[in-house]
Structure formats: C-alpha cells, structure tokens
Image 1 (cartoon, helix red, strand yellow):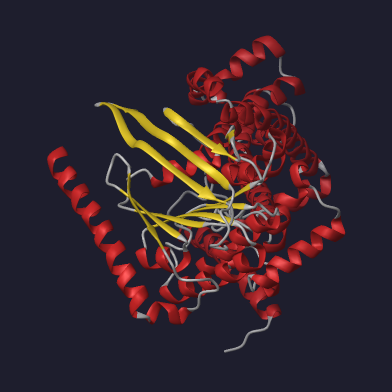
Image 2 (cartoon, rainbow over the protein chains, first blue to last red):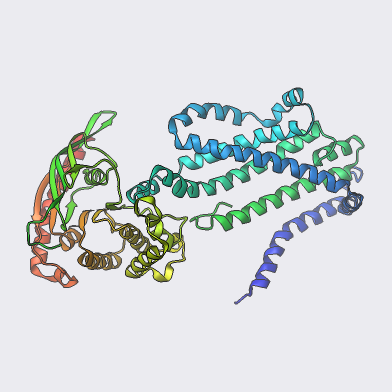
Length: 260
Length: 272
C-alpha cells in the first residue's frame, strides 16, 4: 500500500490526538455517571468555557506568559552554566572526582526544599524564582552533561590525534560535536525539572503565573480554573518537550539511535 | 613495496619490554622484542589474541611508551601520535557526526596538514572514488555497512598522506567477500603510492597474501617467535592464493601460530 506524505501526516496527528480525546471522553462519561459528586468534578465543557473566558479576558495569557518566561529564563541560565561546568569536570577527571560528591549532594536535594530558604534571602520577586529554577536546571543538566561526556568513546580522540589534531582542535572538532546530543538531553531533563519546580514556587509565592492561578482558584474553590491550570501546565510542558525533540532529530540526526 | 635494493630502515623496536600493573603484581605483555621495518615494506604481526600485538602498534602510533627499550621512527624516538603515521583502528572510529566526505576532509582541515579548499576537495574526491564511496559522500556513517565504514576510515587515513600505515585488525569484522575485496584494494593503492605498512591480524592467510614479511608473535609475554619472508612478487592477485607455493607457506606459518595458541591455552589453564 502506497501512502502519500499528506495522509501519513494526518494519520500521525490523529494518533497524537486520539489518546487525549479518549481521556476527555472518559472524563466526560465519568461525570455523566454521577459516580463523583458533580460539585467536585467539573465537566470538560465547563473547563473549556473557563478557558475561553480567561483567554478573552487576557488573564490566562498573562499567567501563561509569566510561567513560560520564568521557565525559559531559569532553564537557559541553568543549562548555559551547566555546559561549561559539565565540560570541565568531564574533561579533567581529577576535577570531576573532586566535585562529583558535591554535585550529587546538591542534585539529590529537591529544589522545592530550598524554596523557603530562597524566600528568606531573595524575597518573593522574580529573582527568587529565577534563582530556584537556575538551581534546579543547573544540577539536572550538569549531571547529564558530565555522564554523557564520560560515556564518549576515546577512539574518536585517538583517531583525531593520529590525523594530527592539536588539543584545541580535538576540543573544538571532536568533543564539542560529540557533546551536542548530551546538551540536548540535558536541556530536556532540565525542562521537566524546571516545570515541576516552577509550579511549586508559584504555589508558594507568586501573584501571577499558572501555579499562582491554581493557588488562587483553590482559595475560592474554583475547580474549573484549577483544572484549566493543570491542563495548561501539561500542555505547555508537552509542547516545549516536543519542540526540543524535533530540534534534537534535526540537529543530531547523525546519531545511531536518537533518544526519545 | 620493492624487494630489491636494501631499503632504508624506518621503524625500529629495540629490546622492547612492556609491563602493566595488575592486582597480582606487574604483568609482562611484551618481552624484549626487537624488530625493524624498512621503507616500503609490508610487515604483518600474527599471534594469539591478548599477546600484546596491539601494544606494539600503540607504541608505534605513539599512544604508549615501553617500560624498557626504545621505539624509533627514522632514528628519532616516537614522542606521540602524528599525521606521518596513519592508524587504522579495529573499531574504525569513523566520526558519526560528519558526513562521509567531511570525514575524509577532517584531517585536511587540521593545522598540521591544512590544504586550501580546492585541493582538499580534489583529495576527498580522489579517495572517495578509489574507495567506491563517492555516491555516498553526503551520507552519515550510520547508514553505511561495516565494509563501507572500513573503507571510509581508510580513505580518511590516506587523505593526510601518511607514508607509514599502522593497521590493527582492520579487516577483522568484515565478511569474507568484503575482506577479500579490501585486500585487493589495499594492494592496488599501495602499489600506486608506495607506503610502509605494519599490519596486525589474526588471519595467517591475510598476512601471507599481503606481506613481505610475517612476524609470528608468541603467547604472552610477546616475543618475536619467528620471521617468515614471503617471496611472492608484487603486484599480487587473487589467483596467488590458489597456488601450492602459497598454500605451503600459509600452512607452515599456520603451524607456527598454532603452536603459540597451544602455549597460550596451557598458560590459561595454569593461571586459573
């Protein structure tokens, strides 16, 4: 059977949407059966209506923008710092051995546990949130970078040396390209950690952002908005991850196996 | 490759010994090996695995230094790897992030042997065509077969024009047909460009077919057990492998190697 690319594209979109559509139908059926008190479970339609009204009212977009900006800011700063540090400890093994226990200690510490401390030092402003996200993404990314670099086969360095490469050429022409896939994985891992941490931070201390939106709604027992907030967070995290995955396929398509 | 005229000595192993530290004390993998390879010669090292052949090659490549003795190239001690010695590794080491043509051009972009773009393109084209990889020049290595990767590694090593080739089991992972085709390709190129080769192999047939001299290395620790001159003139062709002379020589080298395998087996049993 020959299928053209358009129909394959349509089928792929259908396959992506189908599980979500099923979930919404199940949700709707669950409400229809009345097994759960309708006061505790809004219908998909009600949530959709809340979505529309907050969207046209503008407050949803502001909340989304605030959260996205915070995530991107923390993520980019954290991974930008993690890349050189990951390089350093992956390249100079003694430095790695020295820093390894420290990095593992801080990585094992859930960033959420630091939120009260950050509030004490930095208050509840944007700097406090960026700081906590920086922390979260830095340690998530640095460990991925470092372990990825440790797994790089020494054969490529040896080959480059026999072809006459200098230390700098080995770094720029062998180590850097081999590290790009690990940078992208680090970015993806850090992205997940960032979303989790951001929402926690916004739940505790923020006026705006999706976490704050959920927190405020909970004070008014506004389940529609709580559901909307949760769905938005999931959708945004999924969207960002999909973009990163696409980017990965495009940039490091040379890999034997692409991590999915 | 010429057998006449006493050629210049190039690579020289002088009383080489090599020990590695282990939990049970130092392990000697190479014991007092002396060997020299002359300009234009093709010399193969055969012997049981784990017998330190690769260590000898790593010394010539400049990756390791012997515990005792000296390794010299043209009379100078080998200080490290360099583009004057092309190395073919067992695992090829084709760069997966570069296309086929970028792999071949890699060495030509380095400071050590930088060539202007036009000349670089010509060299890349020449070796890709020679290795029958021209049609795949835009492909990434992940799409290539084992034989093609091997040819790519060879093209990359050749592009920087080393006059000494060090090859560590380069054909080990190939099927019989590809291997045989690679032998002929190698002989063709060597015939045209005249390089000095040190080849490490498990295959006695391969060693005899390709070499001027076959060096049989003993079980651990490696010593030079015997050196067999291969009298067949170059250019050699496949048909050579069907002649009684070839088979006789192959059988006698095989016999020598098998003795070393037996010695190694005996060694293993006493060790365990």
